[in-house]
Length: 403
View 1 (cartoon, rainbow, N blue to C red):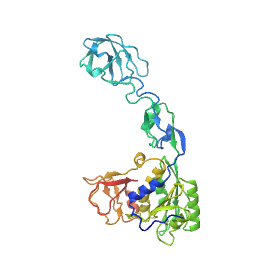
View 2 (view 1 turned 30 degrees about the horizontal axis):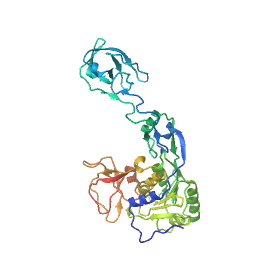
View 3 (view 1 turned 90 degrees about the horizontal axis):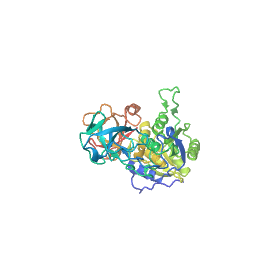
């Protein structure tokens, strides 16, 4: 049986609700080894550590000439060149060797004279500017010695991470297995995409929209078959999802109507409900809970805009916590934007839709006109939403959550 939410419990905000459930989920630990082309966008499960100093030898930082700075008062014969990836010769006394950026510095040289600080007269080099000893050189190990951690556990594998890994001898990366997410859409009234509909019938938009919102390299989202407004069918579907998934999201059936069976079904399955109904619009009926094994489960409102807002604001950060990555590392942390003057609600957090198109002068985004939580035209015109606290107004800056 679920632990009931006491009437005396602190009033949760969207932020505190998201933080509460994120602290209660169990981070995943199962890993797998993947080649570079399959690892991008996944969560790193072991650090990338340098197998040799970086750079592995002292190298030139510029195109120019390897010289001894004390010999630059007189013209020096250029007796050869040093190429990248080849062992360098020793620098002869009173001579110079041509060198390119990244090539190893020869024994005997202490400076690189840049091309632009020199001139050639025949085969002789003359310095037009005398550099300091050690100029234009990158010393062996200056980026880090052998054993330096280049990327830590919990990082998202990016092109930069792969570049560092390849430099240090990796050919594959150990990453966390993708989080298995099941999306369950409920409701007798919904028709499948592509099916003929009458004017009074409703197509299932929540299923594909939430799948698109959650599907990422570190999340493997699955849409379960639609569940009718039947307690037994709903209980079976949720029990199966909890047994086979790392996280579960339901839409519909979460409010106070005669067919809103989700809260009772979750209680019967032993889910601890951490919050149900938050002071926010849209998305007031949202429910969030965890199982005894730390699997998060959400009941989102059935109205499309409410489902998307609560999915983005509450579910996605929780999935990141479950997948072992911070919202910032996952690229889903909000950023601050300014809007045209915005009217607030006195007792609720407000999530107005915004877009980048046609932003007025002095604002980062434009407000999208919306007629409520079922306005899919406004949803399609938006790039995300901003979060506005009760009693606040003006142009912000406000936290912006992108779809």
